[in-house]
Image (tube, rainbow, N blue to C red):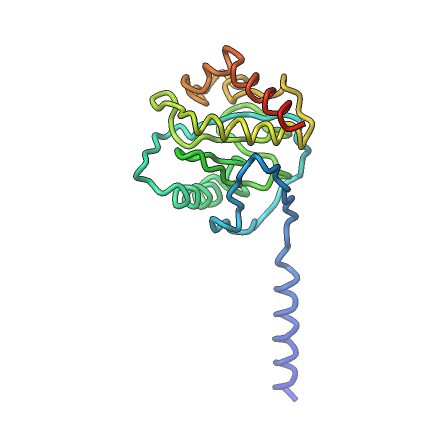
Length: 206
C-alpha cells in the first residue's frame, strides 16, 4: 500500500512540475519575398524561460553592437553568446534586439517581436522594433550589403506594423549618453538618405 502511495505521489509531483513550466507566446512573422531572414529555429535560439508585458510596434530603432566584429568570427556563435549573457548577466528575458545583421548582410531573428527590447541607456524601448548591426561603427564601415539588408528589414517592419517614416530613427536619437549606432551609420540618418531608401523600397513593394 505504501509503495502505491509513493508512486501516486511521484506522478502528482511530475504533473505539477510539468504544469509549472509556463510557455510564453512568440509572434512568428511572415516575411515579404524581398527580405531573407534566418529564423530563430535555424540558428539554435533557446526558448524563453520568462516573459514580460507584450507591446505593439510603433517605432523602428537602429543600434550597433558597440564591439568590433571581424570576418573571422562566427556570427551565430556570437548571437548565442549574446543570448546567454543577456539572460544570465543582465537578467533580461532574451537578446535585447529583435533582429541582428552580420558583416555579410545576413539578417537573424532574435528576441520575439511581441516583447519589448532592453537597453543599457535611459530610453524606454517599449513599442520599438530594435535592429542591430553587429560591430562598432564608430571604427568600422557599414558595407553596401549590410545597408541593403537594413533597408529591406526596416521597410518590411514599417509596412507590417504601419510605422511612419518619421518614426525610423536610431538609438542616439533617444539617448544623450550613447554614440550608438556609431558615426558611420548615423551619417545616413543625418542626411536622411537611409529613410529615403526605405521609402523607395516601400514604393517598389506596393
